[in-house]
Image 1: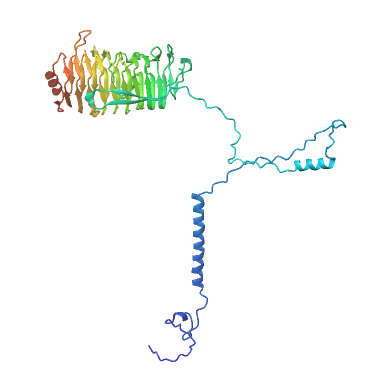
Image 2: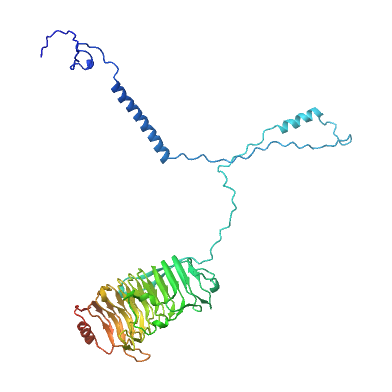
Length: 470
């Protein structure tokens, strides 16, 4: 590069790239920089961007912190002074001698009338729109309450807490009773009610021992749907469909295309979680109380005798409590599909549970039912981790306690024996083929002894049978 070259202008001017303030100028000229359109555009965009940002912040503030509207103040209209002309009749005898002249009187009246009215305080809040105020009708119900139900101390669970919805003080007559009940109702004494459905949550049905609810055939007197239904003191009488009277019952929802289980009808069908049924008397029909695919069911102190199939039928019921119930005389004879005849049993039981988990069965009594307590685990529909405490079985013609193909079920302080009223004996105290069970302090006294019952149950299947005595 030649540093000492003459600084002469050329026809084709070259920019001096070494001097910043001469960029874009002819070679050798040191003039200040002219207007730069690129820099102007950049600054303009920056200015508009800042303006947009400010507007965005303002809109955001207005959105999240809207201005509170000023309270509407109902101004009381200022009363204009009303001039009331009072006619005075004066006579020479009545007019005082020192009465003011007409001009002075007019002046005094004018001064009184033109004096400013007293200021009125405006209300601090605008009145509500003029709507007719309707009185609030208070429901004639008792307050909600909680009951505590005592369980056997062997369970080490304390008391079961039961929430009772508010009970109506007035009953609903049978001729005014709805087909679908959506709020708590009370039955009237001495009346007969047709079947109905309870649908919703936190609904109470409060019965009366002298009123009865009827069910026919494959229907149910009460169908409970929703959650937290409470039913107490109901008396139900159901009938069995003639086609179902002498058949071998199907334990499952479907048996080769034919419905079974809850399809046979009876007293109450429960399809509502956390339902409580207590202190009720239910008879007739295939099932006294049938429950299907629910949790938290509580059957307490009910009389479920004289069902033609099952006093308590349960399919896929979990975390339930069955305590203090009577489950007697659930028995039937039948003709089997192959033409045979069975004088008793026919898949009938006082209490039946299939695919049931984590339930408590305590202090129930059962006499003369086909099986008293029956958990069938065939078809991989096992019932596990259920606790039988202090139950009693009398005169079961088949098995007092039957639990097959299951594990984790415990039997503590239960009894099996003859009916003290009739002298009829029970056949097997228990049948636990293919199961692993826990026994503790039970009393077995049936026609077939404990050792033979274990041997027969073990030989009935290739699935191992295990009994742990504690």
